[in-house]
Image 1 (cartoon, helix red, strand yellow):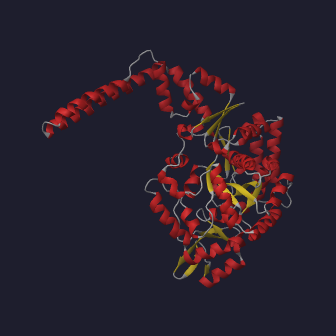
Image 2: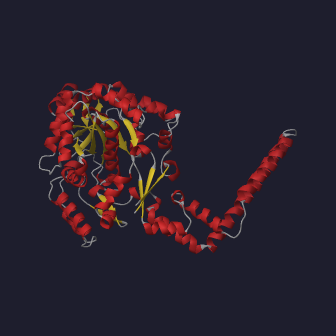
Image 3: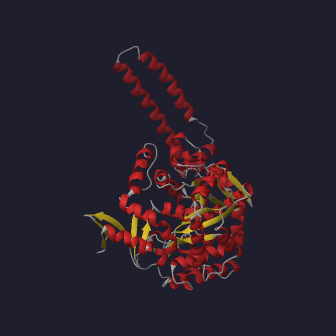
Length: 530
């Protein structure tokens, strides 16, 4: 195994928002609290220790014991749940949807990043305890986003009627999915593990939340991973004061929009708040709460509440109130002794909208850490890259740019059009000095001629490149096939492939290799050669 680190910026797959955050640009600093480095964690520990109540710890630990009832729990996970009662214990949290059979590869990378960060912090802060947490998005209702995974370029899909929080969905019907999927796996030892994991998860557990807990627990229990289901009455009772505040004052809407007004001056906005950022949750529905005509209405239903009635409902039935994307981060930080949220670029972008809201409700805003991203390259693929003289950084170039670069490098015709264009620009710069001393018509004529000449050179460059690509067809085809194999659909494979593809080939060695390779605080992209 060989591990190579590449700056996120050089992959071309990460937004300006994330690159500026990693570089601590001045424009983005007002939108986060402590930065993900050792100094930042020292400050965050002090902030969270002052604000997180012992009673919350006891409720959390008790709720988790109930959630794990009926599951084989490792000693390390049991120990971590017990440690949550202690004032010197903190969590590092990542979250993910309940994708069928974990969905894309980065499910693993998120959790392993959280585990590794806890281990690193334990070395730096030996007097504290750090617990890795996977927050299951059990209350999401975007079933179309989670009802499939990709295996060897084909979609394995679960078709059923949509409706309500996905964590409550019955696993009925997944027998058919299992039969289709298992028929493609073969009978190797690794294939049998994958079949068993899928069948025990989905055919022996009643709902999607329990099935997902089983899978994550089977894969990561040895590292002490603690899995949290937010669809829990006891945990929502802790959050009830913030739900009441939202219903009465629309605090999140007001505060997040203030932040957006500033953030959008330099960055793309990821999500926009609603007046009330809560859903009402029933057995088979999850619908927005709307305040209209003096009443609180549950969208697409006949359910309505007066102000008195809805506040009473919060007190008596807190589990019915489900936070949306704006309020879910607050819910997490209220119920967990959390220091850091670890997620992808899209997640980090919407968290950056929330700092003002957290300040308003007096909850510490967590450290935001861009999760580790990984590209796996086989030894065979590495040899092909070397034969084609493609570096790992070049691998991530846009395919057109990569082909152009390699065709030019391999060409017997050595014409540097960039130099010629620069020469032209210098010549016209001299003419512009003369033009300034004449009338406007001559000045405009010089500019027009400059554009015409440079455009002509650029067209010649494109024609030569096209001709060379045609002449070097074999090279173009080899590069195209290799890059498409490594980066399916011209995207990071972690967003396309399922872990089962690599587990089928490498078995548990795959997860072990990833764990050995990831360094969350390095803030770099990881390439693993296996």
